[in-house]
Length: 494
Image (cartoon, helix red, strand yellow):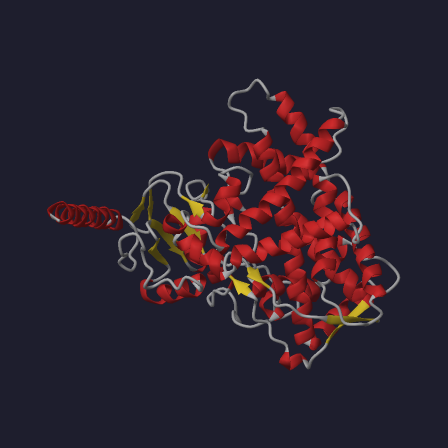
């Protein structure tokens, strides 16, 4: 009995010391970091951050603490940046120091700081430089890739034609068509829309995008320090991404068997050639793990971002038929019905371009951005942010900044038009992020969005199954990503 009492006393004393140590350490750190709500031991700001509504909770804290504040996800301090000025100051004015990266806890088990999106330091610099060069060599931003997009858009038109005006869900057709563009670069070929392996891959892609953003993933990202020891729904994303990694690994092996170092066919070939060139370099980051993870990064980012934006665009054009009608008019006037749209048409089509910009702004696809980190101790707005501190530059607050957009709430293409109806550029339009970590495929994505939208609307009218005023544009999920609502439509030939 005495032993039990002594043991209990020891545990209470030990835990009390741990709590005091935690509070003192946090207090010391918080004296340097921007202000924010006081965290509790181990669970951080659980009272202020609603686990299933992370973004909404951060936006509420902004009202009290201003554009720069600190929150604790469990025991992790996170500096949150809100609005155009704060995000610009960090990502552009202090681009180098804010170019670090932190991996979402839900994705850490898969990527482990590998792959161009989640790498840091020399690993990131080597992979980014190489990947940009390869993407450009395979036509990103050039006429050669434009031809691939135009060809794929025609395949999509054929599939739309086969629906014969009957209702359908556009998710997989849009995912397949957009994915085939990046597949032609990464894997060297496109896939037929009925290819079972390809359709399974598209399902994994869509499921993983939802899983990253659902309530359980948001909960896990906040309390990973406690939940990583327990099984649960938050582990499902790893299984999906692992299946995708296995698919890529099989493609790598297939490429190795038929590789011609003098005639690379795709991104994988180029990476394999670089691996061989640098096999004796101990500082090289060209290894199998980075090959698989970077390929997965490119494949994932090159599919879901554009296809989700197209889906949201379809929904919005049905909700606002007057906008769709104006786009039809401009397409008919500039392009007509007798030739395929090309990228040069964009400069003559300010209204269509403005609508696409507004679709991207409204859809707010990656609202919290991919987490950054500071690469060294840095002073920011009078505060000292220690090296390695996680930073959330909230893109949503930039895309909805009332000081930069005349109508930040709702869907208003006029946000990107001047008084003469010409396209109006806006520095706060950063759906691809900004600074040194800006999306690798921005030029490709912008070209895809313009050519897919114009090609589809040249031939079809998007018809909703309900009254336009009853269309609900509320996303399915809004966590790491904004997931468009599920809907069906019919496409009517013009």
